[in-house]
Image (cartoon, rainbow, N blue to C red; front, side):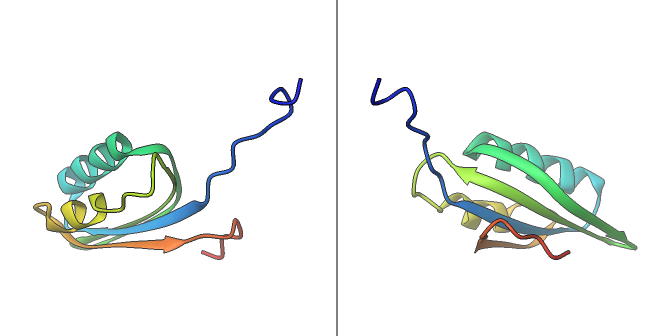
Length: 90
């Protein structure tokens, strides 16, 4: 009975990814999905030679090393991980 009403609480984060093209966007998104518990696209901006994704994520654990690998991927110019309080202004 004690554990029936218990809710797991995970801190949300925002990941901002800047990609060069559609292929790099797809590979970055798939890699990110494989590294986190949950991901939801909050916004996407597309300009010539630039795609920017804002994705809300929930980490599987406290390890954030995946963001370094993401930033080093081909076609990804930057990847930023930011703590997120639930209010999105974008």
